[in-house]
Length: 398
Image 1 (spheres, rainbow, N blue to C red):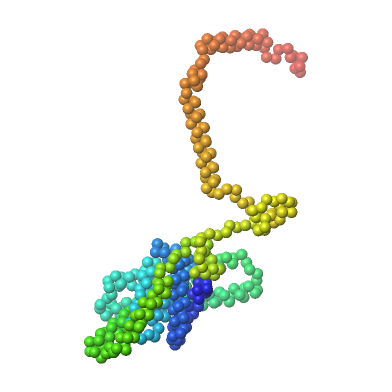
Image 2 (spheres, one colour):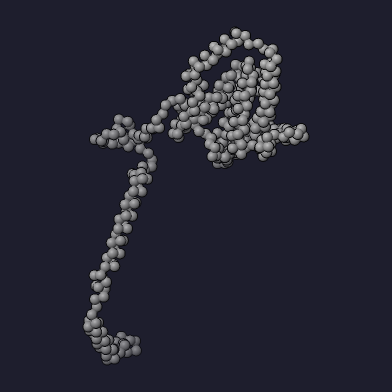
């Protein structure tokens, strides 16, 4: 099962869970389902699909279904037939509490259930009866909503098949896909709500059963009905020795799973290209364009140059990285600041100010006198030569 991708393994385990729930309990099938679900839980923890900092809106639609893995494990574990029933009950209760606490962190548990759990459970029969009725109504509403979503999906599938046979595919197909995604998300949220109702009921039932069995066991030990013979003690000693002998083998499975921090490796695991147990060092080969025989070689002939250009991308590749571009811009900015600082220093220097002030008064007086003489001469010439003088032959009446 470790070689099977996570989505396929979860679907197989879910089918086993539904079969074991609806029909008679087959112990071999139940144990196989528990094993598959535990592998799913291990893969989910390694891939880090859920985080305590997320809410239900942050979880993607494809990962919502994996929230139900602890609930499925608890239901199948409760159906296992074993001599020591109390251990089975405790294991199932632990998984149910884990599922409820995570759903509470994701804000999926109703407020009524949260208030009851905070108060430690209601003591009066009226309150417990009202709580059970409210839970039963939520369960029936969730079941009817799931049935409605299923029927709506089947009707849309039949209509889409008929439309595909009669008319070509139109541009609005993307809207249909969006509707399918939203419908699938709504269906999984409804399934989780239904599982929460069942989890609370099952948890109460298992607690009562554990109390009854513990009381019976305590009564038998007090009355002395069950005598511990030497054979029973020897059998327990052998089991304890075997447990200690196999502790090293079981230690591999009791260690916390090492998280997968490489996004590319996690995507490969989800899509079934690699195994979870496969070692990875977070190093991926870069993308190589062109034949491998030409990579890293100098192109000496026209044939090799043309062969190397065959598998080139259709877009222009970047010539530098973002870090290199940032460093280059920083260098340009430093040069610009240095140049501005130098210009400001020169403008504030003494020789620049002295040059701007060097204009003697004598030169100014000489320029003023020359301008006045030129203006006077021009006025005298205009008096001697009025406008239009000497052009009388060019006029029509001349």
